[in-house]
Length: 528
Image 1 (tube, one colour):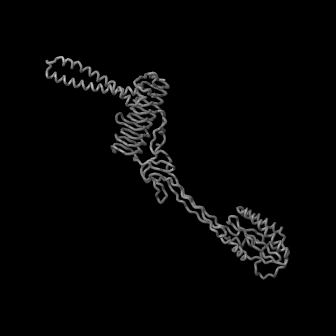
Image 2 (cartoon, rainbow, N blue to C red):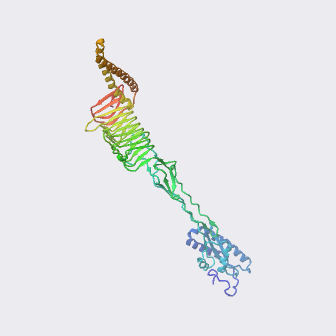
Image 3 (cartoon, rainbow, N blue to C red):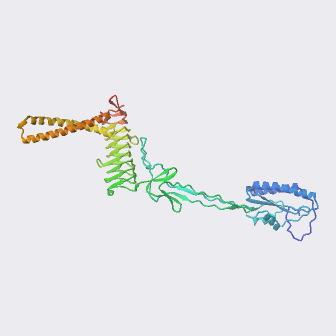
């Protein structure tokens, strides 16, 4: 029986073996290479470890062979060789045959040698006896370490969009997209903004030598906690601390505190006054009065109502459908609404809409009606700068009146003062004749006529004062109107009638016009 077939357990009572010539190491090399190839096929992940082990075994076999040849009388006992992978997560073994009649190696001795080599964790208890029986020069694994198991890093799941708007901004462009949601994101106190998954620790590992391998530390997720937010629910949620508008700043969720009304606002609420911003989730009507010092966002419509923003902008998401004389909006900045019908608007800077009908508009800047229908009809506008739209008027006719290029109060004052001054002058002159006639009577004037004369003189003095005040006011207005203006009215289509006022110049347009650019040049109003 060949030494490559099996081991002979120690103490079997067999007769002492005869001394045999040393096994040629080239034959052992061949056996090792065959065994190594089989091991690499069976354990492909250990390919490099097995390859390095085969190389090391060849060196040992070469030294054993030389020793056996140099001293043929000296028996060389069978020997277990062990090898650790570079990461020490696996251990392999191979038993080299005895030489010159040396002793066999028992399984107990094999296990004892492995223990003294420091391989004491992850021992393959069931597999080792079976592999050991395969005989000499058989390469097989004897231990597997346990790799550390990584934990899970913390994670934040954001439940809201990262909008950067904390308040309504005055639009620099001429259009507002009313088809989508409002740019502001309202939120109630206690609402969860983000879900937070806390880090979950992993489990430590151990190599085959019993050396502990710590698990990588799981990291906590960055929680984007900003102003007016708080971490709650045992650290598993970022929540709103106040009612307000949710926005992102410096990659953190913040809340701009403000009043929020979820539904409609109607006559049952009466008057509402708010310090700061106001968000109304529904519509406003029923004659209610609303006033806020900041921005006002109405996600629905406006009917009969009075809405005033003393320091901010007003945005009406679904349009203004008012009643003449009963719907009024005033804003220190801008008013934004897709539709304006039967309403009076007073905007400090500008108005942006898609359709304006049967309304009165005052604004310090420009009226933009450049998207959607882009139509203005049967409307009176005083604009400090310009009116820009796609279309003025419609097939049904009607009359619009536009004053552009000067502050609304200046144009209105000029239009008001001149007839008042003319009336004051006419009244003054009308009083002159009866006063003159009564004074001519001299001593013959009766007590009743004397009393009437005093009243007429008093009235005349009042009208003198009124005439002088109006004249002084008109002088100031004229001085302001003397300044050149770039104000203009632009539209692609114009249906009559349109009354135009630019400064002290007026024009009535009674014809259908295309591509209008109505402006003043050389003290004349030009249409192109």
